[in-house]
Length: 161
Image (cartoon, rainbow, N blue to C red):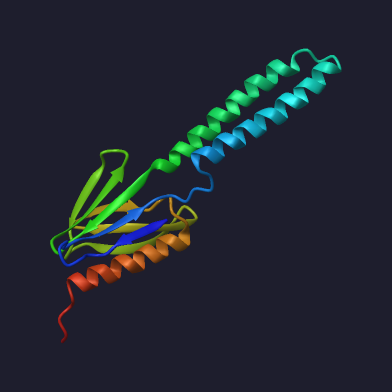
């Protein structure tokens, strides 16, 4: 998901938030885990009724493992990137981590390259390269590259020859 907060009269910088798309809220995730656990325990109860005494134990272990895996996958959706662009610099900050990179906005170039079966959105300047939006879909990375190119061109218009 790409959220653009354009520069306002009092604020000289534009901010772009990049967040992965989520299909479930925290409450919906809990409900889904409860439904899966109830189905597994019901099936295990039927198995125990027919003589498989280990089925409920296996269902408890399996339900716990599935809940843990879904929780880890859901928490991976908390990551995001904030791109702040003003007349002098373009800064990319990865959240919740502390990774941050700063480029001079005049020299930074936005490049959309192929790699690993998907498009890679790269910011390059002075021999440095940074991939952004790796968690976005290909269409979103293409849209982001266009938005960044437009914002950079608006900040530093090229002289006419």
